[in-house]
Image 1 (cartoon, helix red, strand yellow):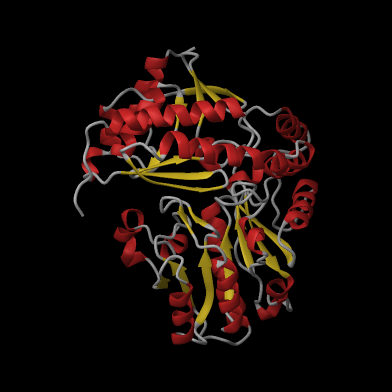
Image 2: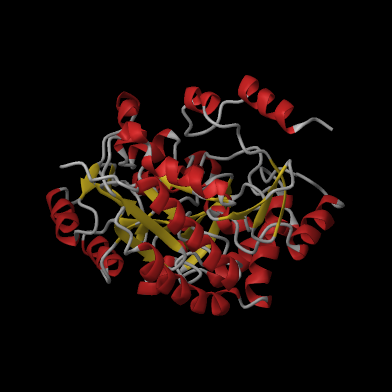
Length: 434
């Protein structure tokens, strides 16, 4: 068995981590090596326990090492680990699609699998473009997205994204889009009027723009976006990769405003945080637009080697079954209220906090403005780690998104650790003038 220090040295020598400045990674304190996990706790190679305060990047739902999910994956492993869906099908892929559609907004009738949230968005963009093209409406090739949007890191998803730090340098590789002011329905309506007949789809993250720093949309905004899309005959794509599977308090964020999009992208919590799997759900109207004789070439020419992987689909089925058997959404409601009270009492009054934004179990804590080089959010995360909680900031916005299964006691402890870490990291600091 290799020692912790040997693994840390090998990490620095061999790995390139996502969204990480490797020079800083190799120069600062030794990386945390996770050995195992149980419930809502992660354990490092030295046996230390940490609360998983970001649900292993927003995807863990029912906790780690959950017996029902473990059993479902092991059972499927005894049957077949992978079989292509190009020219074949399999039981887990079929049954997960049925279950997904049963809990999705009404009117969504088809499931197209992919392997990540980003690719689910790519699928939706390509479907929307090709659907209009095959109807003979060749002018509809523009997309409207929101300022500060984040839809993933593949080039199509980056094109409809708007986080300057992540996306601006790739500008020469991207297609142009129309950008509406976040949460401003009048600006969206203006763009739809101005470009009437040329917009293929509007792309939104419903209720919360996650990677932008947990920016909350006004009440009723999503339903009005749906109305404007209908008035101008544009499709609506809802990216539920971060907001789906209970994260905002309902199974999908769209359901809070009784909205059915034309295409809905899901991922992250789809397998309970166990295996990579994503999907794009569509209406029958979209699906019908791709039907035709082989020689018409109306096929949707897109796919992945691991599309609908049986192990991942088995985990997805177990995830949805666990939502029902453990009454996850019902039990989540009082925890959302508890979290709101804890944030108001422990976090909001801190002098280093500018604003606390919460929707369900999605929380963004905006810290006082400081120069980027000070990495204030990172300092808070490191202070929290020393107190045995794992959190990850978005710049200087501290994010809390624990597994939905977290206990009241651990939720209280997570907020207390976050409060102490913010107080320590911001002590004596004054905000930088705008």
